Length: 259
Image (cartoon, rainbow, N blue to C red; front, top):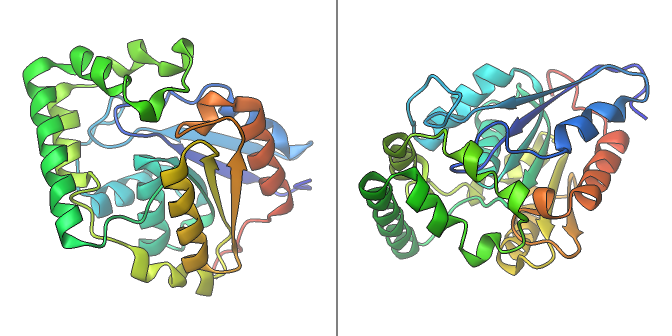
């Protein structure tokens, strides 16, 4: 158990979601204390509903999230995971442990990165031309999200987002615009930052990326597969995901300040 140590957990959502798109996870995390005080805070990404900030590049997004979240254990999903990884590298004083769900450290090959930038630009233009509703219809129909049940698609909640702001987020902080972070992963291991990398067993692409992230970070990183889940493991298989994460948190003390 966590004993009498107070722990703060900051949740960072994915692209075109909001800070309310977490299902039962906040309540499950708040219950891990076993008598200790555990605080869970879900923050809004810049350019998304609930944030007063415009869309920023990835380092700027990470800085804004760190400013809102303070020193804490950070859990980020997809775009939120890329943001939390950037934050852990740029502001290690703020991140006492890290949980990344369906995340990557970016695209190393310039040709791949340019192709992704072009794809993100096409999505951004669709958003601007069609609006959030039609965009979401196509977005949520992607095979990546096939495992989501209707309540956990959060379509109505996602409609709170603004089309031009989401388009700007894609252009400024999408995977195509991101400077790859693979060469810096060893910094997390050297700082002895505890890292948990979670993917759905059906999400082969991000499962391979999670293993590569773990290899780059070193022995302070662990991977876990959620059986029967795809990219959105926390919303597709909540009990299994919550059990895996709360078990890791309960046996993984926060990194002390100054390390």
